[in-house]
Amino acid sequence: MLKLPMEVEVQKTIDSFIGYLVSERGLSENTITAYRNDLNQFLGFLELEKPSNQITSNIWSNIIPDDLKKYVLALQKRDYSKTTLARKIASLKSLFGFLIDEGLIHNNPTISLVSPNKGTSIPQFLTEEDINTLLKKMSSDESVNGRRNLAMLELMYATGIRVSELVSLNTKDINYEEGYIRCLGKGSKERLISIHEYAKNTLLYYTLEIRPLLVPHKKATVFENALFLNNRGQRITRQGFWLIIKKCAIDAHLQINLTPHTLRHSFATHMIQNGAPLRFLQEILGHSNISTTQLYTHMAKTHVLREYDKAHPRA
Image 1 (cartoon, rainbow, N blue to C red):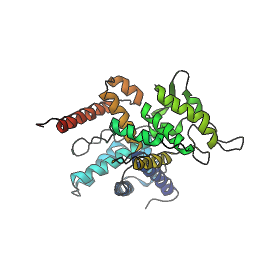
Image 2: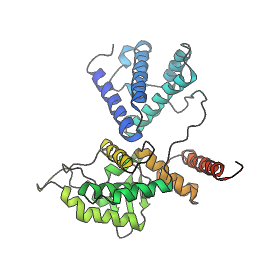
Image 3: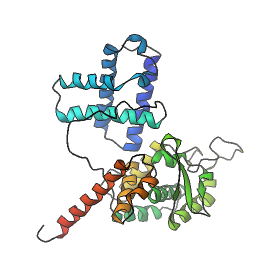
Image 4: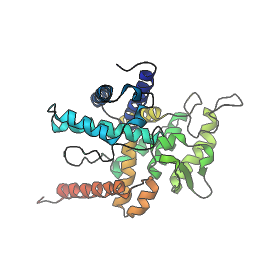
């Protein structure tokens, strides 16, 4: 077994990753449990394969593509189904993507890792009608929390930023005069994103009228620059935002598991459907590779074909 305190550090990283899957990806409890078991299985494999002097608290940086290839071969010998094998590989890809985003490692050993072909999975997204229904319902809540929640959702749908970027915003990151936000994305890459007039006005009202009601009365606080605050005057967390939009979706009677990723997918898909150039969208979303952005072209086409089949009398 892994030795303390290294075991504690490794499990702490996995716990942080699981928290990300819950709050940002909105994965089901069964999937979360499966991912955790998959990662513990991988750690068990490493204990047997890697020399003991390489099993350190920085274990993730020491993992190389060959380690992963050996692991996948070991899984294949156990005759797992394609679906199970694909999930186990997906759990590794997700973990190392998370480690890259968090700056815990600098090289991703899973880039060349190939999963069994299960077909392309198209992320869920809301229709424009769903978005209007959701925002209309949220606009009816005139409480302090309701106004804050509306500002967060309007901003996220106006810009397509990641939830980690949303909750990291500070008051100085919003330029109301020019109508844009300053966003620090993956790899601390800065990008400026325009916001439309309605979202800007909603955000300005929150900043001037609502946010002061959430700021603690004491003169100094480490959260004094955070844009979005909870009821304790602290910065909203990713999980806190996920819980908020989950409740909002229920209140609006939306038949979808609404997650922060769903909002980002919805923004991107609607932009493509309404004619936004792919390169322009890539820059807004902060994708380093345009192939990631091209997924939304496929999503938009799939949606058009589905609507065609629903609408055409002979389809």
